[in-house]
Image (tube, rainbow, N blue to C red; front, top):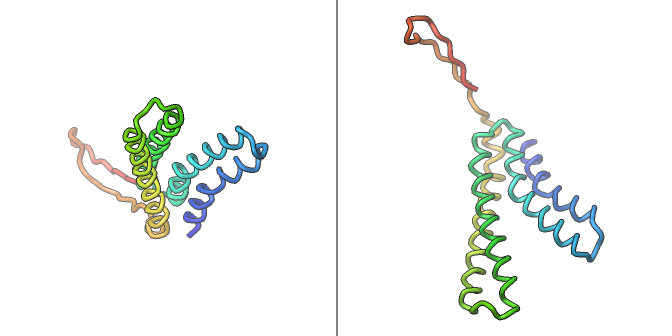
Length: 146
């Protein structure tokens, strides 16, 4: 359960720090909250899994959340930047918005998945294995995997 607490803290703390350290009602606050939320979503659950010794499970989730966040924020950013000036057709803007929502859902699903598996995955831990065998040159070899 400690690893879950670390994961939850890793998800929430970047946003809280960004909010606390910037001037209120400013452009800097908007940007810092954007970066804080993105960093928390991407890295938070992975930090929890890594703290519990399950870096093997943290990496795939980190990649999925990074891709989902990039798709979501990129598509929504392009859609919002081109919506007001009339340079883009409404159908293209709607398509970009749908793509942005899909990327966000992908990142959110990965976030909740990794937070949900953290207690059981870190409770099991990675099992170490020891093997004894012969090398190709005929010498005895001991292999240990953590």
